[in-house]
Length: 492
Picture 1 (cartoon, one colour):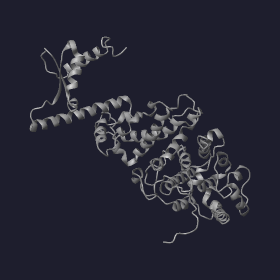
Picture 2 (cartoon, one colour):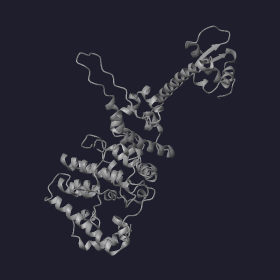
Picture 3 (cartoon, one colour):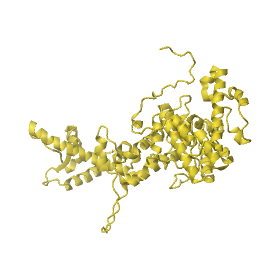
Picture 4 (cartoon, rainbow, N blue to C red):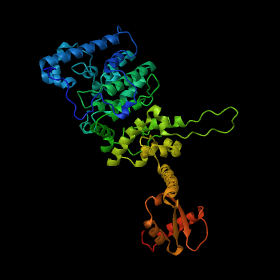
C-alpha cells in the first residue's frame, strides 16, 4: 500500500486511547450520531427551513471557514498542521476574502477564519431567538470551537483555568432571561449533539476538550437534559470525562479547584438547594454538587414508595435502594466522576471529607443487599463509593460484613467437623475477672486467623452460666473499663 506524501493535517495525540476501543464506562452507552450527522442537526436546531435568514447566515459562515482553511493549506504546510489553531497572522490573509461582519463586540467575537468566540457580552447583543440559536449552533456543532469560547482574560486566573467560568454563568443566565421556551429546547438539542460528538468523535487537533466539558457542565439545566428515549445526558457527559487520559482528568480537576487554589471561594454557608452561597464564585464543592444533585434525585426517585391502595390506611414507607437497581440511569458513571473529585480532594485537602456524604444515599441504602453485592467480583454497590457513606452507614456495613464472616465460618466449621473431627464453631474465651485484659490477649494470641472470624462466646472462670448475649455484654463493659484505666498506661 502506497502512503501519501501529503503532510498530515492532524497532530498525533500522545497517550490517547485508540478511537475504536471503548472503556467499560462507555460500553453501556447507546450509539449516538456521528459528527457530520450532529452538525447537520445543529444547522437547524429550531427546524427552520434552509431558506431562512439564519440558515443562509450559517451556511455562508461555513463556506467562509472552509475557504479560509483551504487558503491556509495552500500558503503554508505549518498552517495545515495547526488546523483550526492557525495563528491570527496566518489567518489574516483570509480576512480579505470574507465579507465584513457586524460591528463592535460582535465583530471582535468572530475569529479570522469564521469561528465564533462566545462571550456573555456577545450573546447579550444578539437580537431574537433565531439569531441566537444560529450563532450557538455554529459553536456547539464543533467541540474545538466551543472549547475556545469564553476565554479567561485575567492572567492569574488563566494560569489555573483558561475558561472564564463566571462569564459562562452570566451567558447561560442571559440566554435564559432573553429567550423563549423553544429556544431553550434548541439549546438542549445543541448540548445533546455536542456531547454525542465528543463521545464518539473526539477532537484530534487539540487537547482542550476539557474546556468544552467545563462549559457544558456549567449549564444550570445539564442534570435535567434528556435524550429522546428519556435517558439523562449527564451520565454520557461523565462517560466522556472518564474516557479521557489521566492527564486530562487531572486537568479538569484542577479547573474545578481553580478558585479554591486562588482563595476566591468564600467560606459563607452555601444555599441548601444550589450548594453555593449567593454571589460566591464557582468552587470545587459547587462542581461536586452538580453530580451530587443527580445522585440525590435518582436515589430519592428510586426510594419513592408506590401509591398505597385506597383501602390502606397505613402510610407507605420509603423503599430501600440498591445501586444495581439504578443501573438503568447509569448512576455509577456519575459516582465515578465524584470518585475522581474525592481522590483529588484527598490529595489537596480542599474541602472536608464529610462534604461528599450524600444524605439520600445514607437514608435509603439497603445495606443488607449492598454488602453481599460488594463482595462479588463484579458487583455494583454503593459500597464501591465509600466517600458517599456517613460513619453511621459505614459502621452498619462493617457489622453486616462481620455477620457474613461469622455465618460463613460457622458453616465451614460444621463441614470440617464432618471430615476431620470435632471442631468448635465458636470463638470461646475463658477469662478471670481479676486479670481480664491479660487472659484475653493471651488467648487471642493463640487463636488462628480463621477462629477470629467465628461468633464470640465468653466464660468467666469459676462461674456457671451460658453466654446468650448477657455475659458477652458484661465482658465488653469490663474490658473497656480496664483498658482505659491508668494502671495499664495505654491512654493518658
